[in-house]
Length: 324
Image (tube, rainbow, N blue to C red; front, side, top):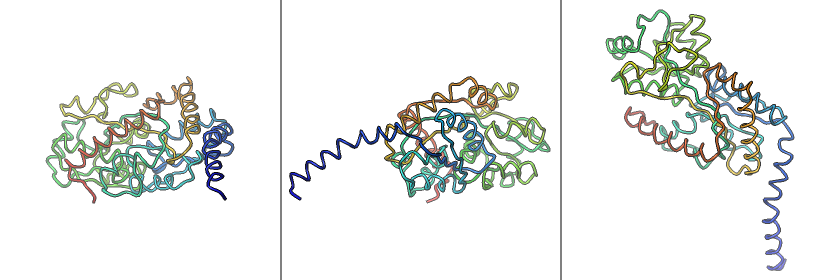
């Protein structure tokens, strides 16, 4: 084939590229979407993803199949998405673990939190509750800190795994209060709450949406909330900062696709997510679980992620947690 012919064909393909992507977005989605949840069932990621996913499926007019892939602080689930076909039919309901904390803990990952994913939108934010077993004698943060200091090396806090948001909430509490609580990771937030209820560990942080049913049933006691402001769901529950500690953190959740997913597809996902999050029904469902729904631009998610990377890199360094 002559060079001129090759150039003409190349130009034709380049011109058809955006048009083909737009056509694909026009018919998207034409089959069920798989959403990877890099967390175990029963935890805040699972609860929020299923709530929001129902609304997004209705807005798109297509089924969304939830696929829990827990393990390694979310890395296992993230790797599935990174290696998936970038066509919009495999998404990840992201959280701080695989997209910020693991990057701070590990020098080498099989993916880059900013380069390996196509951002769609921030989805939600929810504070953590500091929860203990009802048999725990401490009934305030100050009493808890005093008790933990009286038992150095023997006071344990649970999490849903190394590198999860609730793990780092505990490490941040260690730093803020000058404690040396021992971290006990479980395979998900659900198993860690079961361990707390059975008395295997002394305390943990967990998403309000997951902890609230157990708190209301008396199976767990909440001592404080991790955010800067109290939650309307538990208006009498003080913030950790009200005890005099410099402390604030919350769980955040976003939607991402594999890198190179066509922008018309991610734009369609973002617009329909915005529609789903702003229905009165969805707002009521989320607020009833202590969750603030967010429908952001992809650019805002990227900026948020960069800030989270910086924050948790500093915490990991201060706590001496670097894994490699």
